[in-house]
Length: 96
View 1: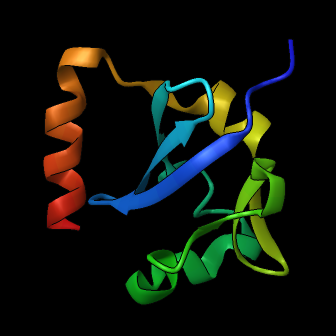
View 2 (view 1 turned 90 degrees about the vertical axis):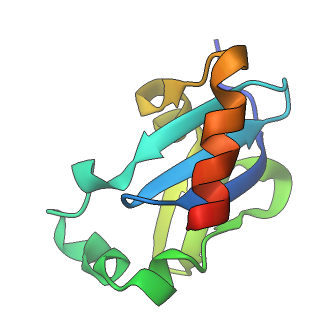
């Protein structure tokens, strides 16, 4: 099964991304898992990290032309937010 496309992304505390997919499900992706990879070193900079955007068509997220994550990576390695935990996640967004 192909992962759903991405509707929105928001950076939250702890170098994590709150990703909302077009099917309404939300997942939190911990970017600590990729910070050790050379091409993702700029994500350590908080201002750069917060500049994440959804790619055209919702097939991934990116920070610039050379740094991106696919919807597959975010879907398969993100942790799904349970419906009753969405309020807590949104509070984390507001603090980020």
